[in-house]
Amino acid sequence: MRAQDHPNHTPDVPMLFSPTVERLQIKYVNPALAPLAKRLPGFTIVKHTGRTSGTPYETIVTSYRKGNVFAVLLAHGKTNWVKNVLAAGQADVRLLGRELHIVNPRIVPVGSDGTGLPLIPRLALRKAGVFVADIA
Image (cartoon, rainbow, N blue to C red):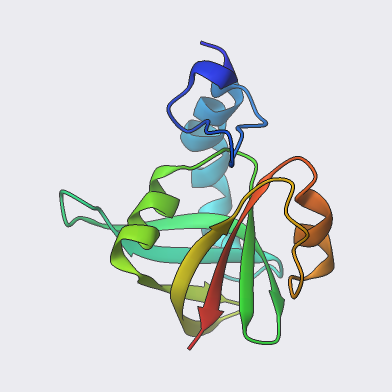
């Protein structure tokens, strides 16, 4: 399956990695990083609840912060954790050992100017969408 045919791929949030790379990351990379993600800078654990199952999940992401703005590049497209947080309207994140609560989640589509975002997500908007939320 091509990235363009994957359900995570949308016009405003394109999937930059192939589905094969995504499957390898989910199966091997994420479990290996889970113990380290709690201690290494740049890694964030997003705690969210399944939209239909109500199952609690923890997803490792690379996040960026500027003041009370929390941002994550969406190189894998509009994944389940993004859909879950958007549906709930909030989530808890663990960033550098601190528990934070995020609210007002939204997606800044590819091609937007990204005013107010941290530098790296703002630059990434040329090719990827960005998940943005406010830290409560």
